[in-house]
Image (cartoon, rainbow, N blue to C red; front, side, top):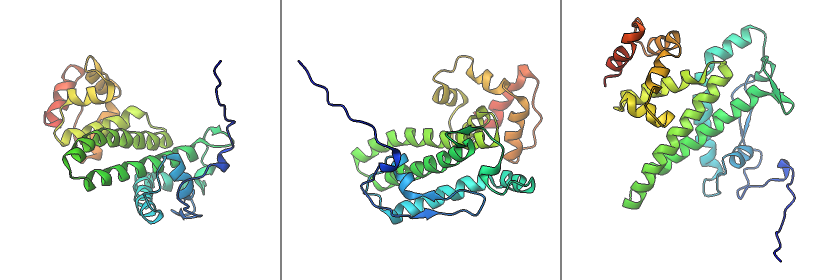
Length: 231
């Protein structure tokens, strides 16, 4: 006869971390909700070896990144009379605006990505190099999730966020096919799917990058994009 030990789940407010961050929080103005370090640490499962001061420094950088990406949108919302993020019309989940969850998710995920990047730079041993290669993949996924969360706040299709990331990675030397495999697990038909998804969005990517281009005809689209990406 076997016995299985069962535990009763407790409320989230009873969760504790192995480091006491107290009530340390980051404020980014009246529009954005404060980021509470204790809640952040729990959400990203961050161990105590990352001190409160280091977490505060890194999370501040994450908040700066996310608010900068959303600055124009924030100004539009405030001009429309929405004084806080919670005031912006959006779906409600668990009694609060879904935008609040997207905001926290973007900041939390960016914080974890920044911490992993710093961990990679700090470990220079052979074993550390192998570990760093694995961290590169994880941080890439985290930054993708940050872009997704920001796109969700903007009510912009996530494929736009992926397209921007692919553009950035392409400038770093990756090929179109390798990027499609990286983000979708296959290259079969995916490149065309991305390029054909929305020509207007594709063109906006390049306008945002300072490249004034006209989208080519559909049959020439892939070739033109590859030329722009430098493959």
